Each structure stands twice: as C-alpha cells, then as structure tokens.
Length: 460
Image (cartoon, rainbow, N blue to C red; front, side, top):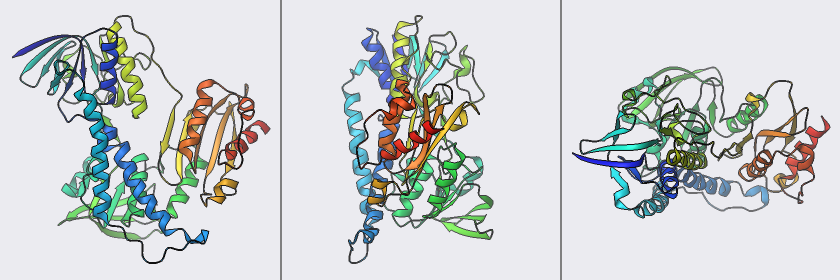
C-alpha cells in the first residue's frame, strides 16, 4: 500500500477539479488530482459541445427546408444521412475532448493519481486498494450524473440518457423524451428536425428553465407548433416489448394513445456524484442528498478543510460556474484557514433551442412581488427579426421599482445567446434602465427589441 502526503487533494479532474488544481499550485501548494473515470470534462464529452454539434446539424436541415419564403427554392428532397450526422458529432466531440486531454497530459505525472477515492476521515483518502492519501485540505469536484426515476428502469437498454445519445452510430426512428428542461428541449427539437419522430413529455408544466408564466406559455405554444410537447403529460403505463419501449398516454387532444419507440431519453435532471465517497466517515454535516453543507461564497464545508465545487454542489451546473468555483475552492484550500468569498458573476443561462431561451440576473420567480416593474417586447414584428424570418419571441425585463436598477430578464427569441451577454454585463455593473438606454443601439439589429423592452420599463 502506497502512502502520499499532499497539501491539497482534489477529487475529480473535470472543469472544477482542473481549475482547483491550477489555483492550488499557483498559490505554491502541492496538489494531487485523483480521478477514476476518463479524463475530459462533462462539457466536452457528453454536454455542451456534442449537443451543439447535433443542434448544428439539425439547424442545417431546418434551414434547407425553409428557404422558399426568401424566393430561394431547393430542388429535390433534403436527405439526412443519420450515420454521417452522428459520425461528425462523434469526431468533433473527440476533438474537443482531445484538447482537454492535452491539458491533462501537461500536468506532471506525480500530480495525478488514477482511481476512485473514498474518505477514511476528513483528510484521509483511500484510493481503490493501492494508495492512502493524507491531505492537508480536500476539494470535492466529482461532478454530477444523470438522475433516472426508478419507473423508467422498465425500459432496460431502450432507456438512454444524453451521455448515450452522442455514441449512437445513426439516428433512430422514434424517440420519447422525458423532461422538457434544457437538455430535453435541445435534444428533442434537434432530433425532430433531423427526421426522428419525437414526443416530449414533462411534468408540472415546466418548459426549459423559465419561471415567468407569460414567457413559459409563449415558449410552450411555439415549440408545440413544431413538435409534440406536453409539459404536463398524463402517462398511463410504460413497458418494454422486445426491442421497443411502449408508452400509453393521454394526448394533448384528450385521447388515450399507445405508441412504440426505439428509445426513451430520460432528461430528468442530474444529481451530484457523491455516492461512494464515504462522506459518512467524515465529520461533515450532510443534506438529504448526502452532499456536504457548505458556504456558497467560500465553498467551504462547515469550518473544515474540505471544499466542494462545480456540479457536485449543484448551485449552477454550468461550465463557466464550475471554472470559477474550482478556482475559488482551490485558492481557499491553499490558504486555509484564511478563506475568502470567490468571484460570483451575474447569472446567465441559455437554451440552444430555436428560438433560443435565455435568462439573466434574478429570475421572475425569485423577485419580490410588488418590488419591480416589467417591460415587454414581442419579436414578431421586430425589424431585424422579420428580415431574417426569425420573428418568434417574447421578452420580459425586470427593474427595481424604487431605484430603476436593472434586475434581470427572461425571454425566448432570436440570437438570445448574444443578447444574454449584454444584459448579464448590465446586471453585474449594477446599471439602471436609464443608463442602459443611454448606451448605443445600432440599426437594424435584434438588440433594438431590448431597447423597446427597456423603454417599456421606463414608461412604467
């Protein structure tokens, strides 16, 4: 049995873990990355990048089918070769993963340990059956994994998660998607545009991450006009029959329908990957999910020398948040017990559907009733949007009633991924609506719609 003594032990070599390692080393501490699974971040392997590759193929197919309104006519059928689509997804996915692997390869061999770690006590780790690690501090950066409700297990190998989709050799014929959140909407729409017969089922009426009822309703109607989406589905039975999944449900028209699918995609959320870490052997206080209680600003677990960062803490499971949190956790681990709040940027989230969905700043659901005013713009008659025939969308912006400070926005509409950055910067800078209206707006651009919404706020 080997024994390693180290200043900072980091569990997980994903985005947060790598950032924690760099921060600890930059502070002059010795650090050890412990990883039992494949190197490469969730984003590169099964998240952001492969999903955008699939979406890009879907957008190409969709645009090719909808050129006629411009007077541009594509002669002949639009042929989608599923094998070619998925081959590019996998090749480019592997290329992005390769960049991460190159980064990991640049880390000295003595700073990496292969295996799965388990706590013996707060600062002692057992890695598989070969190494004991005695650490001065520990950073938990083990990421997250898909959460699958038990009833879905009936589908056996017909049940997939987003991780599995990107390993498909070709496109299936029919897919049922459970969960119209970010992953479900993105993949459901993309598969539908690539010719897959798709049904998207949800619960409790949610559409993406939206919390503003008006924006959520607009989004629901918009997507329902393109593919089957029932955000509050009534499922009567689920079964496996041969190589098919069989689902009996009440349709949007109120009829009981039984349909067969090649696969069922469970996009029902992700959970922190903390099972098996032996956290019960520590003195850390755990929540109902088994995740250590921690300070959201310093990422310190209680008053201990243990920190938790990235998807493992489930604050905002996004790559840029994981990178910031990893740096905070690594820096505080290095300076423990002198810990400080880390960088918290203005919240920003984007769903790469079409139209795109975005949220910045404070969500509608988190605003205190009566304390804010709302501005609205429809993109249906917005100039640049109509020029591009991308004129579908509705935006709400929120401002503090007393001070006029811009608080945030929720919307669905064209080029939301770009507009979201501008608005997130405004939130982080603490700008008022009047100050934002003093900023330049070119003509004709989609951002003119933002100005319309801000003027609406100012008028209220």
